[in-house]
Length: 357
Image (tube, rainbow, N blue to C red; front, side):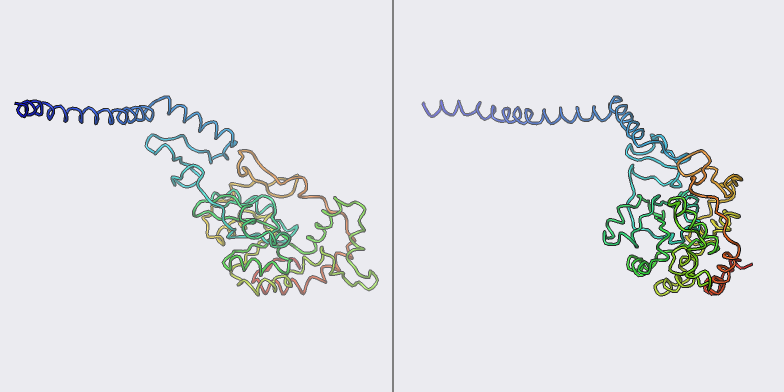
């Protein structure tokens, strides 16, 4: 009798067990389903999208205005929300903040008072050139800081863009060619040269503006005024011996990796010289005559629109200073001194600059 009672009780207990398992499983899955629904609701919430748009607007405002013609476009519904389009990059879609700092592929290495600042400012108009504004002086003064320090000074670039910097003293720094070659033998070098006599007077004028009590140009030019012996140890004179400095560079770089820009033609025909530079760098000729106007007051060309501005831009007050009157006899002595060096330089570069006409 007892056995049969147990059998009768066992049957309903087997029916109860599966129902308990189902209840327990549902209780476990319910919170997960609720979390999923809440997450979906947050992602699709119009308020969330609005807040994100406001956040991006605040970030862009904090970063300052984009250069004219280079503003980041409004987000398009056809693009993923984390992507923006910048017209500057020729239709490329790039994640916000994309780009990396690279060592420069091209350098403006000289010469002082030749027109390097003007060239750099003109080149920065090109959308495929990113350049450091200040002179890093890495290969002459700061080399011990290392390449990573140097790289960190560079602006971020995208694929296809060229990183540049200019430091005019590199051309006359004896160690610079070897150091640049050690960084990359493929580095393209640009040298802006100018009539060495005019350049020396301009160099002196700059120093005079900072140190009004320095000796006269005439007294600094000669070791001995009576004998007419030129003092080549004076940097204003030494820089203009271009052939001597070029010899040093040709030990490390072939001539086809060095472009010489005429400082005079940079004034009379800026678009023509910029065309040569863009060709040398392998870039499309975007900088043309339409970018320049001639400023009669300053006596040199200015940009109709500079990088990051919609307004005309001329170089600062420190450019285009009035030169002091120099004794014509001293000027002629200097022309006679430079003539053989100029002729050698013409032969080395295969370009006649017309300084001895």
